[in-house]
Image (cartoon, rainbow, N blue to C red; front, side, top):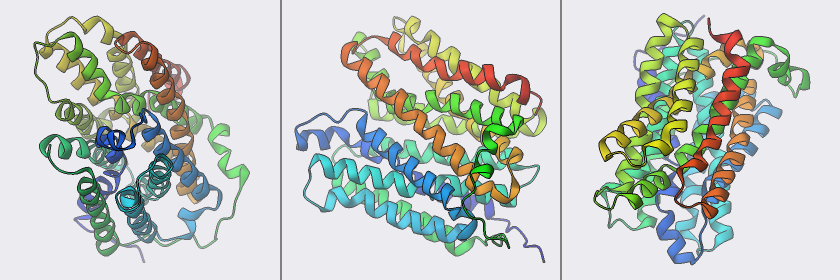
Length: 391
């Protein structure tokens, strides 16, 4: 007997995804206060530690076929609870650099049971409408990652430890809500074990390979952009002292606009196809990256428009690439393959984040260093265009 999808299904799933992913950049939002207490600069390592943990978690989930062995709502709840605990550990124990990095590592580890599992839940319940559902879901991820900057921007006096407790509570509440309200699809009757041949289908199936490599190119740009949005705004304001701008609010707005890209892209995908929507947004974000240095001398209004367009398109292609991966993958290993593709994508982000961090140390006020982010979209377009443009 087939299960009926509740009318509030997407609303609960979107909120839970938002709540869980508030953990992602929570450390970045209070990095200045943490660095003052530690007396050292952590730079891009705060973000990279989360990415490394996420990669480890997704790899373990894929290798041991966890999404096919554990009910999705239980896995999501477990990950939300322990991710929240990892997030606040630096507010509970004596502060030092190893603790901070290990805390962010484990936060990323448990996020592996939130982001990909949310996508799996959507893929299990939505068919032809998956592109729209993914648009809302990844949009929630974007808002979740931007939210710490909003909270920081409107609460200047909030101690960083209290801030982290607030974020962790939001994550915990989202996990409880999803587990309580959403039904699970039955697990596969045949329990899957580790299978190299199944997981390497990413590289063997032409359409799946094209979608995955488009996603990989997009990921090279995305997280490095998000991690250094504050730096981009600070560089611009350095050359324009005549403007007064709250960097935290500007960062929140730039990242949060990605929700519009995901939402509108999801709607457009129903008419034009996920492939076209993904590739157009990937191309647009590459153009924004390329023109960035030329807008340094422009007024704040023009520069803000560029940042908003970049914020919209840099992530707007993500749900459509994820939709294509879900559509082209092996149904019986959908959860594990989605998780593995996500893991590889996040591994790529570490290299682009650390590269930008390295370049900023030597060229602190030069927008040209961000041109290296164009490499991902160019490669993604080159590999995936012919295969997925009509999808």
